[in-house]
Image (cartoon, rainbow, N blue to C red; front, side):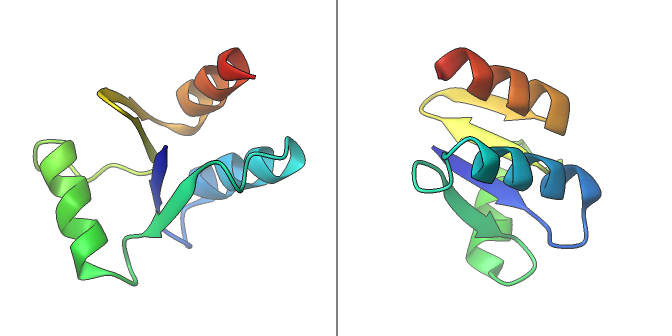
Length: 77
């Protein structure tokens, strides 16, 4: 799984904190879109030019937003 995020985004921090509290930080590859043009470009490609964060990609599944991402990860536990 891949998580696209921005350090200044409070919704992203909520997801990152939840992942840490639930021991998932090693199972999800994080991509700071402000630190990597390649990650930002990939996010735009994945989301069709929208670039919303946080964005979780799990295979073909794309989940956007802190609440939906946390709900999705809870179901996977």
